[in-house]
Length: 599
Ligand SMILES: Cc1cc2nc3c(=O)[nH]c(=O)nc-3n(C[C@H](O)[C@H](O)[C@H](O)COP(=O)(O)OP(=O)(O)OC[C@H]3O[C@@H](n4cnc5c(N)ncnc54)[C@H](O)[C@@H]3O)c2cc1C
Image (cartoon, rainbow, N blue to C red; front, side, top):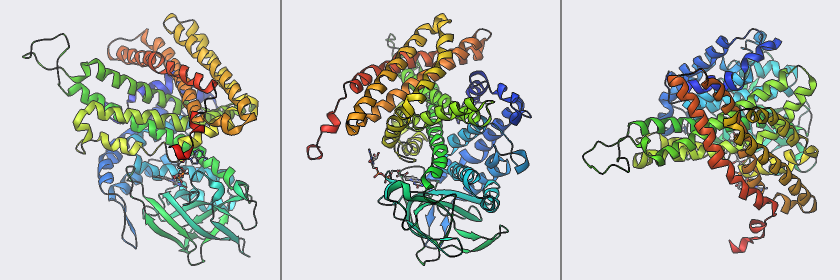
């Protein structure tokens, strides 16, 4: 099936030829799965996405959620699409069979979620948040909380949110002011204001389960005093039936540039002093628990960014094949027919760079999902621990690199469409506006950079970076043995060595002066992203070289396209890290030294 949502052939390639999902069937948890069951899940997702999600993507953008003072209005297609999603079992795709789930590998569930995000990211956000919310409660909620909330979240009876941000505390969660005061019955009275809360109010489900960060009076200052609370929109009785409203008021709706299908709300908790919350786990551990949800959400943001870029690229590709304009440079005869713009080298440049970003980004996000499968089901505790460490290192990269580069793919799609791309008659301007959110939410890319360099790369004595280098070694060896890939392997090996050396240098600088050592963390993230995505391209090129040996026609073109995009990435993109590493090595302080008064 030819789709503008995603290349089905590419998904097949990534899942089975690059990530070797067949081997997961050897694990007891996935023993009942086969290539056919995994394919069936992906095909079902694509069918629902085509039929129910993509058709209202534009309408949801044009008719953003509206609050009439009493209730929120969404276009009806949102609920129809989500009902189809829930009925097909995607909310509990990775759950145990006994709990009504499909026990799918995270990698396959990730591929399915990717398809929905490409078709309509605004509608998909409601269920993405719900899945992450339920996963947090399954990990840290009490058995009683799991009974009352998790099963209803996974059945689609309730949807979930994450409520962290406050007007004065966005990046700096240490400064939240929402309080939770203990009551004699074991509940907490929650009071405060949260802003930008996605999916914060609607009638799509019977109830909404907010996971709210708040401080218990007397707790330590800063992040060490943050606790996590379940605050339902309507109280939930022990038998799962609904109680009275819980004093969570919708104070306003944000009007956004894109992502308009998802309602963004300002919520007031406890205006009448009647908002009851339930503590999750231990007091003052709230941020650590929330990171469970945020890490999952960060990978989801990266995947969403990839997929909006991916659909942008596919639309641009179709357009470029059909739009006649101009003639070959060597043709002088103005009566000769015009050629499709895809034949111009500069248009191919835009398409090839987009392809390298979105297919490289997809490989990265699915690799992260595969690490999630490893950390849950690998045979040895050592393998599980290593997968966890590597995933933790890569999470800021998975969130931020696609947010930056797949947004460029959306930008380039507008350029390929020319003037039409800038009009609302064509879909690519919406893709750009939707994708522009991704460098901002779930921790801005600037915050991801600090997390990557300050905590993940320099923390733990550099063990995680060493693991990354080790993980690359099998592809470096394979490339050494394949003449057409040898130079790429050597280039990647050198890039990784330089990255390790620069990290050490920045670590020493940070030990002397943390402001200086971390001042250029965004450049570091950019470099690490390019090195990791180059690795993803080498992995794909190795698989494509294998596939090409026995292919002809469209199949051979598919593999040649992979090799061309790999070559593009190594020739045009990876060399950019040279000057960036030199800048980092020099401990350049141009930005740090520029005084606010000079700007
Ligand atoms: C559409 C949308 C949906 C959202 N959904 C949710 C949601 O569901 N739940 C939720 O809780 N929140 C949500 N958010 C909030 C989002 O996570 C925050 O907007 C984000 O964390 C940034 O916070 P801020 O907007 O206050 O910006 P600020 O924190 O004020 O940041 C402004 C700029 O300063 C930079 N900056 C800030 N601090 C530092 C620092 N220490 N070092 C270097 N640079 C810094 C940032 O990188 C950024 O460029 C959403 C936001 C939007 C726009």
